[in-house]
Image 1 (spheres, one colour):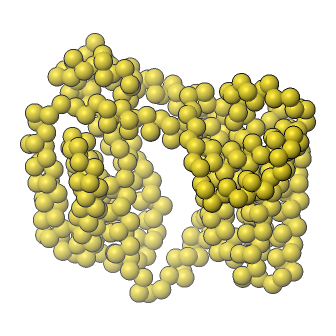
Image 2 (cartoon, rainbow, N blue to C red; image 1 turned 180 degrees about the horizontal axis):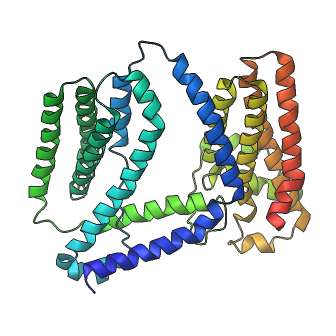
Image 3 (cartoon, one colour; image 1 turned 90 degrees about the vertical axis):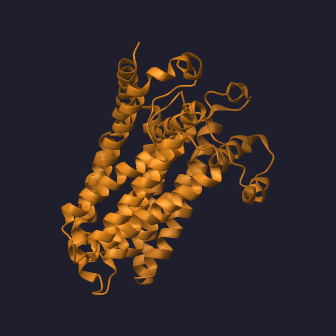
Length: 399
């Protein structure tokens, strides 16, 4: 089998896997939430543009933002662990495979850059007095191609410290090239661009005689798949998912305070899983921070209440994965516990976690409003939590 045929086979396998879980991810709930978020975001985006000060450093903002954006991401290779045995002897014939992997990655990341650029286009036109938006987008896509090529060359370097230095250097060169371009210094921007190409050519010459870094590429591909599976696991069960456990010593005292009794065992297990297993705690923190910013920044009182309730619903919906988190562990099925304890334990944990989020949102909501509106906000969210935990969650899990 040649490299081209192999790549297309791997690509079709990945596409089937994506479509398999995509139908669960892009469900009706998510589409409604996306429509509401886009509508609210458009409305407040216009207000934000009007509130921007005249001295807003638009050129510096876009240079730094895109300088970072252009160094993110890895090359998607679709490699698997057995390839170190079966493909290693055919490495010399796999150049077409890696070329297609490189350009596939570039095209997908180019779409992301274009999408982000379209979102930021009104801000660009409002704050940047310089070259046209399409020229800036073209330069960004060209720089992304160069950065991705340099990233591929860095895979051959075994020194991790040097690889980190490369990220910093590429970020700095990107930011300088973009800033000079936005400032009208096109010649000096082109000079920085040429320096980046020469920098990549230096490593390209060094890597000609080196073998493909199979272990690194396979490790990066496994990490990419695990990120996708962890995200898909928020919407459905993913058998491929390998759970990551983080101790987080700061919560040891909290876990010790749970009574060592039979009726508390399931609650202890769920609490421990929430704090240490998977991405549940990190997801809770991220949604709390995002929701807090939204609740604090939104102007309308009704909009603030609705968005706060929406963020609590989103958090609870994502935490429902705890219900089946231990189904693959046989010991959790033979514990001599009443079946109702599991349901009571998860309901209790969801109530505590969502109530803490409600309290956090209420504090931020009160910063811009009086205490009576804050009380209404808190009570509305409390009702949402009660309905979610006692009615919606179990209809969802049993359905």
